[in-house]
Length: 114
Length: 112
Image 1: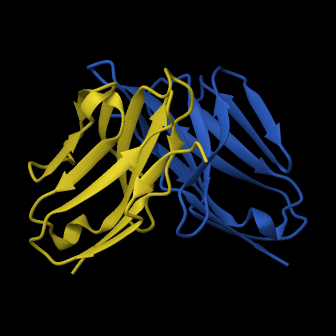
Image 2: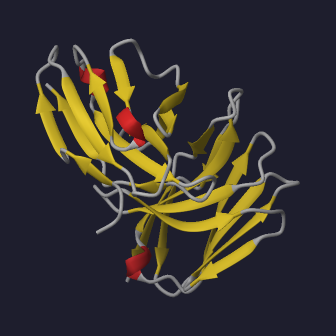
């Protein structure tokens, strides 16, 4: 059974600092997604990583995927308060019936302090 | 707005009552998913439709839960004889082939 682990689960950082969130998963997959969720809201798609070595950047966020290590990272550069949210990684899992489902990590709650 | 929509957004019910939620996916998306999210956790997969066919059901989906997608358009998720443990956010998502799943705003259920 596919398991997805994120760390840290809670991250408090100062504005202007850099940090990395890690996402490990237990079985082979070549598709990994990062989502953002604000309190009481739904999930917003941030990045889709489709192959080994994929790197995507949007503003102060950069995501990468190493399928051999079964590891993805979400790097935050020069954090600002607006980045405060919960970030989830999710791995695409094909079921025995050929259906697709996403398996999510528990999320990293990021708080950026002034 | 052409995103995924869900109705109602909030539902408070008493234990033992039945509730039904609706999801309208993005119009050209043929795949529809239901997830459940409890406080402090990531979403957990419940069920998946491709067009009108329900192709996958999680073990989390007990006999009290039923989902339909008539004509491959909107979907409904019904919970019979609700229990306090059913309190959660119920999220619907849709996709076309294997592009990212786009999530709706969710229905927050509270069972008293």
